[in-house]
Image (tube, rainbow, N blue to C red; front, side, top):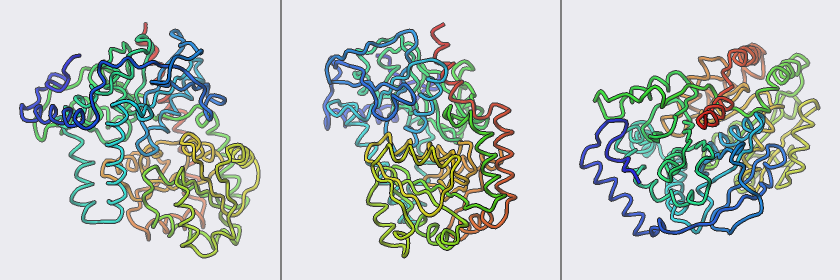
Length: 487
């Protein structure tokens, strides 16, 4: 296994930082063991939520051999982890694009193999990140002195990537029995790094966000980015070793693709935007989609938004979709804290057929009141938002992975400094607002959407225009790059 922690894109890592990387790996070995010599069996199985619509099959590790063979000609692996909902959502976009292009997507979640050191290492870091996200929303001091600097500058440094690369060596064993010539698209850097360490031949590292950070580097893979700012920042490894001018990435290691978006959303952009404007023209309830991510943060902000909108809901000037993902207690807490919410709400709780039926009927049908969605299954929890996007008028979200989606967006306060660049990018392309950094500014933007049509119309027109330029074709392009590596 090549040591990728000493030199990164021809830039030498300081001896002290390399020692820290070695200590990081040893810490996890002491805690979770080293299964590098284990020969984990793998099998393919249907995905309850995604096989039917997107042709997705799960790769199961340490569960024995299965009857479904790998397709080494048309198969493509989407490697991911659950860390919040963002990386899952990007993975769904890749699977959707692969399916639309005639390929067979294989879902490989490195955070789902509980017997392995790989999953134990990822799970520990995921728990820390989720805890930090929640604390940052409750403590301004922690957010200012710890969370924002870590997400903005800490993850940006090559020294951080050196440690990640060492830790990713512990993740490689889960790839041992997977055909090495099946292309891999990693929607988080760890699956991409692990695939490279495991000897997978064709690896694409699909980088999220719009703030270049060394955290996302997986040397040996083709790196893809959604924006030109990211392209230039990654090309010169800008600021990734303080003020040092670094050796740049090779041109063939980095590609601009555009936004990573599901095929089903891209092909329906014109139709969906036309319906949004028609609903506004006919003074029908404006549909606001509120999505609470995997970290479960920002509940106070959502309470304020829902309280503000409820009078308009009663007057049939607004309707609300609330997706609490797999956090049922968040919905129960919202009902307990907001007077009148229960009486106006229809609950779609853990019934996927009901959710799919509602989402399909809402595209052309009428919607009133508040509709709440909760699903215990992680795929349903994430994909619910994607299905509801088509019939929504405005998506309220922090500026993370959803900042790139082709739906009018109202950006809530970020969780982590790196996210703010998603809102900046969206505002510049005209399909989202500026980041609303407090509750009063959030409510101000909601009022603008409700009382006039200027903002909604501008965003819809820009979304259609952006589609014509190929801005939302990133997922297709990533799949084409990955499959093209075989040639």
